[in-house]
Amino acid sequence: MEETPARLTAKPSWLLTQLAVHAHRLASNGFGEVGARGYHYRVLAVLDEFGVASQAELGRRCNMDRSDVVAAINELAEQGLVERTPDPDDRRRNLVTLTTAGDRQLLRMERVLDRVQDDLLGPLPAEDRQTLTRLLTQLLAHHQRG
Image (cartoon, rainbow, N blue to C red; front, side, top):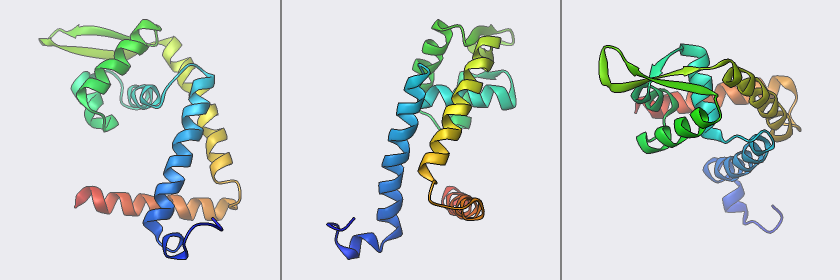
């Protein structure tokens, strides 16, 4: 950052943007090691935590565009990580279920993501990591309500 103007490095918005780019690169590279993408993690995590869901529900919970949800589910279904079945109550909807293979892939992705967090936050002690996470959560919640 020695070549970066001080008026930029003093702005939290600039710092957050630079870190977000770096965090995304680390996560993408890590997920690539296990044949996955960030969208896959989002979908698998939602299914693991909340259970069977429609594609629309997945989109809302993952904060993903409908076309991205469909593409991610197609990729995951091709790999046998999720199953898609017609909703018996509404044949126009599909229900998506996490498979045993999907659960195993989610665990691999969790290990990768834990490594990414350690790499990204390496210089910070555990207490500062918790504080940073709490503050970022507070900011995000504020702006999502907004």
